[in-house]
Image (cartoon, rainbow over all chains, first blue to last red; front, side, top):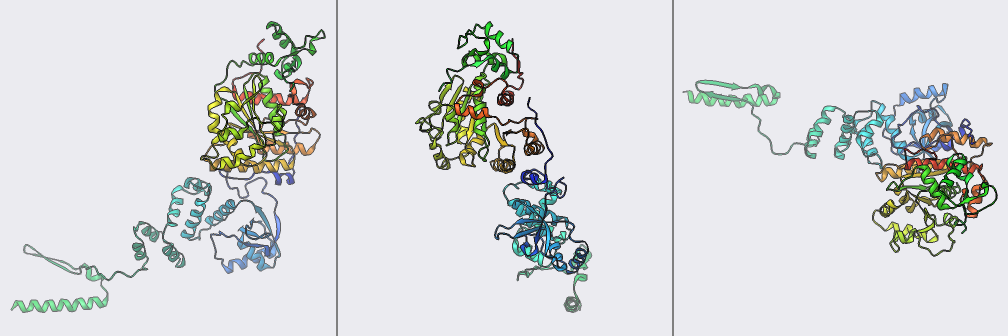
Length: 272
Length: 332
């Protein structure tokens, strides 16, 4: 009689044989029973991830982290991926802050989990950053758009599922990435994050309109007439609309007063 | 090839059917079947012809007529040496012995399956290469091994297929399109493949209803399996097709090996959906002998052969796919 025996899987065999996670399975950050071995890698073999969405690091924050690391070491291994360009070098997908802080603290090696697959790395990088509140909406939108472009990422709903966000939220961010480059750069450089502004921009039909919203373009030479004062005679009644005068600046008010005085003078003439 | 002159003993038939051999004996008497070797010895040594055996099996299994559309399965693994061809040979020949109409297609230029089926390595017969490129129609290229088992043999010419296929439109789907016309003639169409990732193999995968992955119970094989699954998943995703059914068949299992036991746990844990529970094909000399002699197991092994036991359990899987309501009982 056939009697198949089963023996507990050793970590070595598990590392060799555990299946590769791919489309349809959730990214489990530390939710797996067995995350995988980590390795201590020299800091000079670690470079930032090419497709990193976030690029700015707060010096004070880093310094604090560095102190903690000096005391307790690095608790959470970094996530790295083998570099495609340079052999023996790894790109840090998640943990660039920890790396910088570790270097500051004088560490020579840091613990790293090596993951496979370019796509997975980008997902992790993006997910990490999405959790941070201070990523610029444009940077976020661009990151999501580049994920969508990769083979196998076609649908927004899939992406929304993976990231744990609303379909509409993701759609919104994606639409930001469709803005013209000049506009996007301006928004990021000047740290314009207001949802209001973004909404206005999305409503604009042309690049020109967008630039106007941002105040990038000076208005065209043709000026539109603005009504300042209306005096209507309806039957025997005078109707006066003068609310606009309150919108004028001091200079224009003075000019208006002068123009009105000249009109009054003309009326005086006729009254005689 | 001496397969036509070989027959099966009652005991073997009984083992394959998991029945008592007296019910077999009864059937033969009831149907006045004459054994091939009229022996004055005990009935143990009597052998019954392939034709008679097929009849018995069909009736016993309740296979009245063909299902109308063949189930296509391919034995695939890009890792070589796992025992793919051996298992393919056993499954296809025994399913045919058991009354089904089988077409087995050798898609491996090495042609080991063809050799086991009796085709000389240097044969001039048309191969899959001729059929796909259109020079020979499929039905003229197929050769009968014994009634119930037909084969499209292979030789080195099959390597030319990569180039041919590459230039065709719908290049991964040519085989599927080709098979459509003959699916009503067979119960199973079975492929043996070359251990590689190639356009021909992509064609075979696309044409398959079931992909049978033969995997050894050792680390390199398991590593290969994970890569294989990943590759297949991506391939079907990119083709925008559903994954076909998959069965993972552990092979060359050794009872006393702790590494094999660990490997079985890996398979059970990660590939549970694709496994027959508590099943593995144990390492056996019989399977090697079978290939050498070009004779399926049933014709020469002892009734207590572990290879026969394992293969016959594997056959149940395929039979059940074809006849889901099917019960393994002899209708005495």
